Amino acid sequence: MCMVYLIGAGPGDPGLITVKGLSCIKKADVVVYDYLAAPALLANAREDAEIIYVGKKGGDHTLSQEGINRLLVDKAKEGKTVARLKGGDPYIFGRGGEEAEVLAAANIPFEVVPGVTSAVAAPAYAGIPLTHRRMTSTVTFVTGHEDPAKEGSSIRWKELAAGGGTLVFLMGVKNLPGIAKNLMDHGRSADTPAALVRWGTTPKQESLAATLGTIAKEAEKAGIKAPAVLVVGEVVSLRHALSWFEKKPLFGKTIVVTRSRAQASALVERLAELGARCIETPAIRVAPPEDPGPMDRAIDALSSFHWLGFTSVNGVDFFFDALRTKGLDARALGGAKVAAIGPATAARLGDFGIVPDLVPETFRAESVAEAFSGMDMEGKRVLLPRARLARPVLPVELSKMGAEVHEVVAYETLPGADDAGDLPLLLEKGEVDAVTFTSSSTVDNFARILGEADFAEKMSRTLAACIGPVTAETLEKHGVKPAVVAEQYTIAGLVDALAGHFLHAH
Image 1 (cartoon, rainbow, N blue to C red):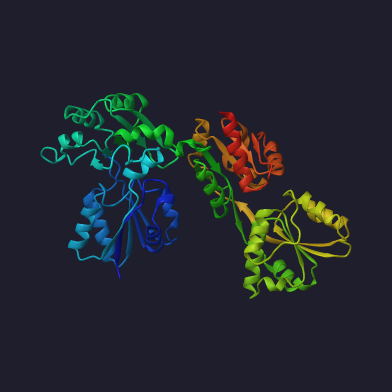
Image 2 (cartoon, rainbow, N blue to C red):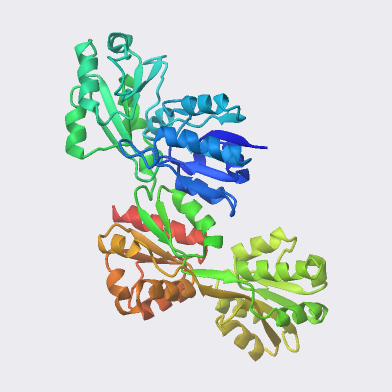
């Protein structure tokens, strides 16, 4: 059965999508999105979903509104579930009402999923509450540009100017001088606080506070362009005291994440929480071993091992995937003890009901070997499910202690993206603040993507941040000295080190 969901995609921060909106995206056969809908939301669509961009940028429409209406009807008549993503809320200056009318006229079932409108969210992220008990109990939303085909204006400027409450104009940058003039001509004081918030709720957010009499000139001077929200009213005076988003330690920073796409989410999420704009350029991808035979044989012989050593979250995941394939679970480990290289690996083992017997204080292979040094390892059989071409430190040291070490390839680390898209240009223009590296393989493959010959030159206008000293050593072999090396060799440690660097740089 066909269905069209008119979904408010929120104001830009993908975290502000509603739970229902996200659910509709996940089950849609077709996703139709516009300029202001956060692209990150598309990652939630099914792999086989048809993704259609329809533009809807002021003065520049990839598809006309009539074309969009026709597209929604046509896709629905094919029996498909359609998720129509609209920036903000579909029924607040989003022409969602028009799309709903067309669907109703064609007898196509539809649902409206309200969204967080930029009229509320952008001021909130700029530190401006739209109502406040001491200042005003009313707020009015106004379109910043009316239908040019209309005769005269339907905006009652006299009432707006005299009302005294907060006014929020959407899509009004182009007509800003006229908006300010109309309000002042009808009695609103030129000294009334006013603010513009551009790209509200995103790392590109810009806020400009002035007065109604000066906001147009200040906006022109600052080069503020659409999309932006204009707020007029006494509540704007609270902005300085209540600003929170623009005070985040990584606000406005552009940071490249080179981790594999499957693993990048935790790093991207932490960086975004601190205000960063992330560019994902996966230098690597992880895959099961080309030959699963050795892993299968190791699992068949699990009962003969005294220890299992896990040196990464990937090793844990692929090991337990192999267990499941053979119809087994954690019980197959029997009496074997388990070692983990760090808290992230230990936490992932915990997801499978395993509490490691050994977790060293520092998170590298040398530390695991040192932790074993106080134990009697003579004749002990140790299984290490690891990446192909992993560092030899741990098996070498365990063998010196008399252990019988069996390394098995749990996963392959393969090259990721074939090219870096626009990233070389952004690096050249100095528009990237940092590039993060979470392993030696991310360094090697990122250098390959950018070009080994001039890798150091391309990295010269940004800073490199490494998860630990081993990754840093690999980077230095490519001619780049890292500016940031995490003291704790974890994702959290890397993010903290990066945030600390920029905090002390100010």
